[in-house]
Image (cartoon, rainbow, N blue to C red):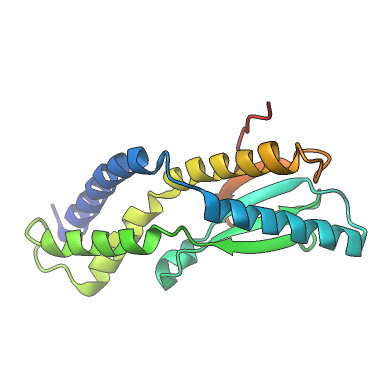
Length: 187
């Protein structure tokens, strides 16, 4: 097996074991920072809607930004949009960085460096690649936190207080890529 295949298999196995461990840990993780960003997003969207006389809020989206894995900013883009979604300017854009992600990136780096015996002579570029591969797997964790935070803000806070008239579609996915609808509980 060549080095590239060996490295790819190692990174994938490492990501699988790390994510399996972290999903349980982050399932009950507090979402206050994300909830605050969602609330600010919706307030900004409402103001922009009035200012532009735009259509009603139709979508709330969390985008995964692959570039943020390379820049190490680890940002996720939150967008509130009317029916036009991509065609016109969104009503509001905010960015969220999970408070655990920088620490996890450091721990992943440490583990990759300590496990150099499995892949001898890992270069700095290969370690960075390994960190990106593992953090890309965090998307499953972010989906759980997104669903939890959106349900809290929309269903328990803003919708019940009549701050919004109708619950918008909640989406998640790659920026300018495929989006998936997130089913939220509205009872």
